[in-house]
Image 1 (cartoon, rainbow, N blue to C red):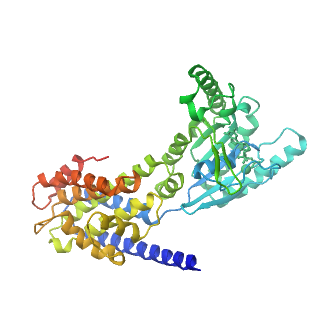
Image 2: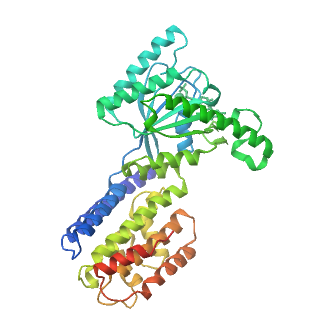
Image 3: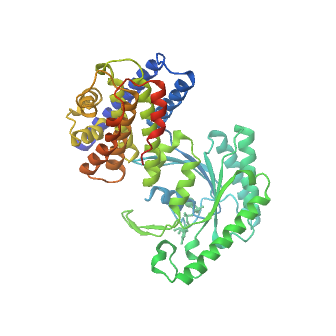
Length: 452
Ligand SMILES: Nc1nc2c(ncn2[C@@H]2O[C@H](COP(=O)(O)OP(=O)(O)OP(=O)(O)O)[C@@H](O)[C@H]2O)c(=O)[nH]1
Ligand SMILES: [Mg+2]
């Protein structure tokens, strides 16, 4: 009972937070119309606001089509992305003949997966029929939704057997997408089950503790498989232009009765996740980094968000407005904190921002973070204050807030360390001229500070 009402409260707060963020973004967009900046700068700021909106308010589930034979490791790949058991693996009997979109969900977000089980099974005549049906069912599914990326999976031990039929099925998938949606998604090819290649006992996920010669031997075999797979795909002229990555991997994880992780022998999955991330549109990237929990990817997106927010804040500061009216700037900084907390896997609500600001010494009530928090932040960011905030100061102050939030939420820094990161970043604007930011000043400054 209590749990239920907690969740309701959380949902309501998340909805309220989204509303506040949307309001603020709208307000900032209004202000842009009055900016004394060149059109090109204003357009650039508009696209940065677009990024904020996409990352914070318009996320959707990333969509992947997984094409591979029965047992290739499609379900295991889904689990490997989540790092948890969300899909059933190792069906004794595969549900041959059906391709279907599935939504796999954790509390951090959802993935849309087109599971093409059984599509390329053509060895026995009966199975050839099933394969035909399977391809037909996939074609139906592709009309419903376009995958962002197609992943072709083949067992490493089967990569040099007849995979031509698999690749022909894949070509039909591409032809259908082109016909139906005029879109050909990037193709990622992976050879799975690399861990069981010879020498079998060499554990690829734990190379430091293996015999170096044997590791080398195994990696050479993996490289051979990769080369073969890539060559084969490139022979198919309709696939070749879309191939972006070919690697051997291991997606092996094993789960106990309570779905707890019993063994994790994933190898090169971070590289694979980075590749998938790179080829996703921004609308899926936020969700993806929350699910995949690769620190570097979360941080890359947090860094983009920080830079975009800093530029917008600097732009707004170019308006000749007194400090009392710069609430939208500081509200945007609070939004940035909430956004970075969200990328780390926390819910998008005011709690995380309140907790962070409180710990940083900005005293605000939880319920008021976006308004009162913003007011208190002015004093915190600009102690002593002037009557104006220059673009340079707004820019550097925002970078400092983002840098501290990234340390705290993404790198597991203590609040003291986060504060130190904040102070270190903030020292720079103290050296900056305290005049109102001109366009020239803004442009010069915005290129200056690249924090990581
Ligand atoms: N050693 C090893 N086993 C793997 C790997 N990937 C998957 N497996 C195992 O292979 C079996 C089949 O994997 P699934 O993920 O169920 O394969 P699938 O492609 O979803 O199979 P269907 O749903 O039947 O089409 C399971 O027992 C997995 O644990 C891998 O990289 N290495
Ligand atoms: Mg499966």
